[in-house]
Length: 462
Image (tube, rainbow, N blue to C red; front, side, top):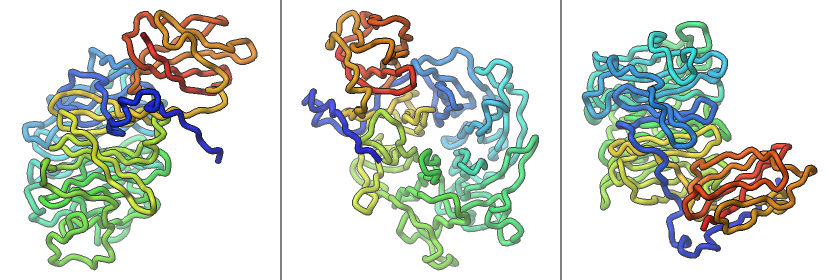
C-alpha cells in the first residue's frame, strides 16, 4: 500500500490547533424530532421524523417541500420512545424501488413494513404498504427501531426488551420472544419474507427462526461498517453502563448478555448461562457522573474521504450530555474519547453515499454534518499537478496547468466542514470559477479530471 501524505490545514491556522478533533456543523434545520438518517445510493438524505414522516434533504442542504412518505395517521408516537423509528432501502432499490420501515402502530406494537416508491422518485406510494412482521410490545419504551441491510443481503431488525425497567419478564434471554433481539430475514422474494437457513435456531425448537442474536436491552441504533461488513450496536443501559457491541456477521447466535450483564458488570445472573458464552461489549461508559450521561445513541464507523484522521473511528453520542464519542482501535485496544458538548439531544447518526457522517438533534430538529476541524486533506499526484490562483480569491479563481492533455472536467466546492457549496463543469481552458457569491472563509475545492482522478485543495475567499 502506498504511504499517504497529508496537509494539515491547522498548521496554517494556529487558532484551530486547540480545537477538538471532532465538530458538528449545521447542515439543515426545521425538522421535527428526527430519529434516523439514511441514503438510497444517491446524493439525497432521507430524514425520518418520529411522528411518521420521512423528508428528503438534498446535498445542498435544502429540504424538499413534499414529504417522501407520510404515515403519521398509522403511527403511535404519544410516548417518548414510540413512533416511526427506522428506515432501510433495499440493496436493489435502484431497480425495485422497495424500502422498509419500523414503526409503532396505533395499538402500541412494532410493525416492520415494506413500501415502494411512486413514479416520482421523490415521493413514496403510501398505499403500497405490505406488513411483514408485527411484534407485540408490553410497554411503551425500549422499542429499539433500527433497520439495516447486511452485506449478506438480509434485513436486520433491532428490537428492545419490551420496556419497563430491568427486563421484568426476562424477554432478552427468552428465545421464544422476539424482544431484546436482532432479527434477520430475507426480503428478496416478491412478497412477505423467508428466514435464512443460517439463522441459529432454524429447525431448533429452542428458539424462534427469525432470531439472529439476543441479549439486548434497547439497541438504539445499529449500523454496518461499510468497509468490512461488521455490525455495530449502541445498547442503552439501565443505570450503570452504556455499551457498544461489535461483531462480524459471518457468525450468528451471539448473546450480548442483558439482563444477566449490563455492559461488563453483572446485573441479574439468576438462571443465566456461563459467562464464557456471553459476547461482551468492545466499549462502555458509565451512566451518571458530572456531566450526567444517560443514554447512548449508536452511530457509524467513519469510512469517508474528507477527514483521514477520523478513518476507522466509531461515532456515537450521549443523549443527555450532547457529547459525541469516538471509539478507535489503536495500540491493540479500543480507545474512547468524548467531544463537545453540542446541542439538541443527538438521537441519530447517518451516512451518505460518499460515507460522510451526519447527526441529528431530536429536540432542536437540526441535521449536522460531522467534520474534523484540523482537516487533513490527502495529497496525491493530481494535487501536486494543479494549483488554484489567485488564492486567496475574491471574485473568482482559475486552475493552472489546465490543458487538453490534463483536463479538469468538474470543480466541486465544499464549506470547511464539508457541506456542498457548488458544482461547476469545466468546458474551456483557463475557465474562471466564480466566487463572488461566497462568504469570506475557507473552502475545500475538489478537482475531478477527465479520467475521474480526484484531488482536494484549500481555497481562501477574501
